Image (cartoon, rainbow, N blue to C red; front, side):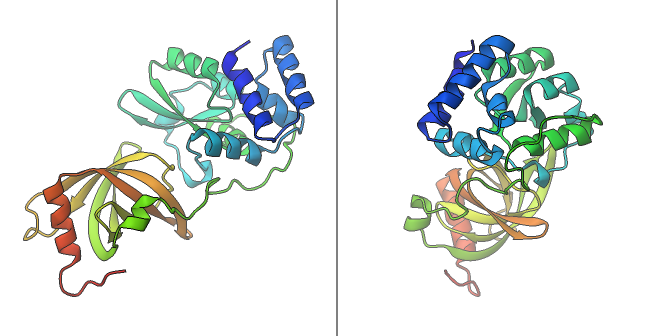
Length: 279
């Protein structure tokens, strides 16, 4: 038995999402058939897919990704075979050099991760997704029909299984300044253009056409007017908050984790220029 699979069920039990009897039944089934514990719990209607994703994301800190917010390129889908996708209920989402982002029902399933890494030659970065969301994506992108048992509590996948409002130290200790600053950031092998809405010494708020996973690190290219900075400013930010700002856009709150002090001061000076107001 895979220890990680037992751990998944145990965590669900400890967080009171399932009973001891449900856990033991799932573990016995895995010993007999090899089926994933999380998958059995879903198909037996012992847990809703939303509660499974919520437990894994909130209590283990594994970011949740809503697949309906993404358009996955064909070249990314081809990285993982349909057989592996169906076997472990997972789907590739993005690629960055030698790492692929994989959305899974059970990101703790190291057996699945090892098999994907072995078959693709890529390192795997795991995220959690809603089960029905993943199955629908497999059907759509691979062109197959999955006749799975209907899952309990199936509903449109939420945009976040965490709170939308970030109340961490970055929000408490910083004065935020209104600012319209052009930025670029990489996503699915492309550089997306966006704009900063407000900025502080510790974080920024910017728009994105796609939702960005919580706790993801983003490399930013910040473009100030030439009289403030002759070249783009590079920074590394961590996504700490995501809210829907419209039908096709999201507000991304990000903590600046790496940026030269002098460049940060330049950005603040620009945001404080006459005509801008503080929040």
